[in-house]
Image (cartoon, rainbow, N blue to C red; front, side, top):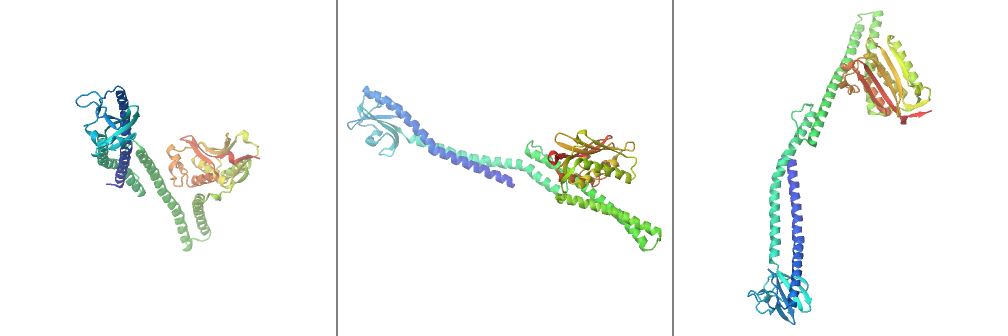
Amino acid sequence: MNKISKRIIKYMILMNVIVAIVSLILTSFILPKIYINNEYIDLEEASEYVLEAAKNNTVTEFTNIYAVLINDGKIINMCKSSNGNGHMNQMGMMGQGKSINFEKIEGKQIFKSNNGDTYIGIKKNSSYGDIVVYKSYEGTKSLIKSVNLIMVAIFLFSAIISTFIAIYLGEKFTKPIVFLQKRANDISKGIYESRFQIKTKDEIQELNDSIDSMARELEVKDNMQKEFIANVSHDLKTPLSVIRANSEVIRDKLVSGNETVEYASSIIEEVDILTELVGEILVLSKLRDNKKIIKLSEYELDNFIKETYSKLNNYLNKNSYSNFSLKLKIQESLKNRGIVVYIDNNYLFRVLSNFFINAIKHSKSDNKNIVFGVIENEENIEIYIKDYGKGIEKECIKYIWDRYYKEDKSGGMGLGLAISKEIILAHGFNYGVESKIGEGSKFYFIIPNNLIKQK
């Protein structure tokens, strides 16, 4: 038996004990009061008949109720005798009356006779004398005792039944929970595929579905991480191999003169590649560990746009991308307004530079137009880079911002977008991408109103 089943049994038994205790309290204290009150009501009604009989000098007839009239020390039986005598007579040989001291009875009272029998009765004053109406209380006591015994029997029966129910429910409820526990352990070991299905149609199934979704995401992330490590290892190994080979050639004096310079230049180029790769990894790590490296300050939006546009154009010219065209598209309402934004202009330029380089990589051979745009909305300003290239597959869009994203999916993004994402988040901006296969992509970030002011 598992722990949850034991706990369910414990709780159900505890619940039964509480119910039993409450029930016994009710039957022991409240139920007798209810019965006694009902008995007094019956006796009150009977006393009215006895009083009427006293007026008429007759007797009454009741079932299990007795009545006497006490007048000048005389005890007169007010109930019809067994011989059917219908007139009042002094209580000479009346059965139970011989053992009862009627003089000591006051108001409503439960009393005992001299022979130990228990009675319940009332005593009322009248112009004809004191009227005492009473009946045996033994039946009421037996009834209450029987009710208590029945309650105990019900409790014991409920305890037995609830134990079996608890065992059944414990197994039924804990089976999917135990499965989820094993599922979580499998995921921690890198086993992502689910071997069972839970169809409970409740929160447990929803939890299982969430775990399955998480497992699929983790599997994708895990595979991307492995591929990323493999790619980085390859990117490190290739230039290192070139550096080693060229260094050995120079060391062994297999070349001389201009050839030595060429081999040395090749080594420097490979070192630059390594430096850039390691630098990107370090920047990404710093951004994720401490976003305070971003220093926000007031910067004129017009100046930032003009400087960025100029730098991006210089990049095209410097890297022989003369066949590319960069168009600046600024909404008319934004021009020459003196808008100031709170940004780190160097890091934010790096974001747009990454967007721009990706646009170059993914542009089609027959359409190398790229748009650098700025749009004003009601509550923010959107800055974007748009290309007309091959686009990104829908299922890949949510992964392109991840540092483990495989380069050869949807054209390869490297670490640039992962770094861009961290920079944008450090600014407190929203970001995103819109893309259609064959039509191109638009990467953007949005500056909220609280980081914008009019100069």
